[in-house]
Structures are given as structure tokens and as C-alpha cells.
Image (tube, rainbow, N blue to C red; front, side, top):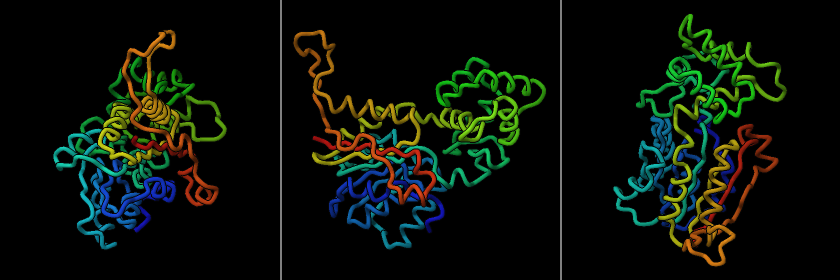
Length: 306
């Protein structure tokens, strides 16, 4: 049962966590359960969250088939609610945590979910299908100004003006309902681009907007660190520069004693480092790059609680 999602940098994360037998670990992005299963096989217990009901159901079935009954707690929720989740479970501290950010292979490969331009399906892109906002709502309902903001900020799309102009033109005639329709509009808006599908940046931007992926990401990292036991580690895998920059800055801040203006003669902020950085930008091995295409853009950052 590994076809649902292939976990990236599985060995590196398991090694970095240095799993303690009987220790408690948090997996905020369950996906296919690869990282959680590796933690449990190493002797740990797991609290895991995911917004996607498919992921929860798949992982539970996988864990039971692996004989892990009683070793895990699965919760359909956002990892950004970490403090509330752990408080409700009566959890005072954890021994380690992992966040494998982005979209699972299953979400990309299930055409009906609307994440991929490879399939013609409804413009959905919701990780949590309980929420109301979809990519179709964004494409057809956002103002020109807001669409430009989304494509510039979350897609870093250099042809945003052309794409948005054509979206506005088409939606005046009819609603844009499917991924295929949107991809066709983008094809007509973007010159030939070497090294990737013309729709890649726009689809990324819409997905991030629909799911609020970057909102509160830095605070979530801080919250998780606040409940790490001394020596416990937080491992975060990112897949694009936007989320990586947020994590990099959050880790740097938590690893810094004084954050005062350097022109001040003495420290007045009282800020103290809570972690030390172990790895700042670790990449997948050549072997994994050959076996898992998704790992090409992966970057692993690790901090350890002081």
C-alpha cells in the first residue's frame, strides 16, 4: 500500500528525529502515512493530522495492516491548530515533529480533485472538501486586482497580467468551470516556456489561495517548537521558495538570541533562542531523485529544541 503517496526524504527525516522508543511524535501532514509509519516502526507513538479525509482513511487502513493498532491517533484537522489539538489530547510535550508541506501525490493523481492540469476536471483544489471556497470560485469571482495578487504572490507568474486579462475576457462570456478550460486560457496567454508546463505557476497560486497554505505557517512552526521537549527536533520539508522562505525565517528567528536593531548599544528585546539549527537546506539523494520525481524540489530544514 505505497501507491497513494511516496513520502519524500523518508530516511533523512527518520534519522533526524532520532526516534525514542515510547516517545510521542507529531506528523502534521499525514498524506499516505509514510513518515508516521517509519516513526512507529522505530518505536515511537504518533499524533497525525491531515485535512483530507482520503488521507486519514488510507493511513488508518495502512497502519492497521502493519500491526500498529494503538500506536497512533489520527485527526482530520489543520496542523496549524497544533496547540488546540494537543491541549485537547492532554499532551504537554512531544519528542519530535515533521511537516511535509505541499500536495500529496494522490491529490495530484486523482483528476477529479482538480489539482492538476494533466486532467480535465472541475476546478476544485480543496484539500479539505468540507470548506466552501474552490478554485472555480477564485477564478470566476475574484476581482482583476485580486487575481493579479494571487498569481504574482503565490505563483510568481511573470505573465500574470496576460493570464488574468484573458480569464476576465472569457468569464464575461461564460463561467470557467474546469481545469482544462483554464489550462487552455493559460496556453493562449503565455509564450513558450522552457522547463515546465505554462499552467504550473497559475495552478500553484490558485491551490495556495484556496487552501490558505502560507497563512500562519510561521506561527505553526513556533507553536510546535513550544511543545518540543529539550533535544526534540522539528523537520520541515518544503517544495517551493515561498513556503521555504517562511520556514527559513521562522527557524532563523527562533535560533537567534537578540533581535534588536544592530545600532543599539545593548540588547533591550530580551529575545532568547529556543532552538539550534541542525540542517538548513538538505536535498534528496541522487537515488531518491531518480526514483521519485517529486523529490527534485524538496528541501529539508531541521531545528532542535534547546
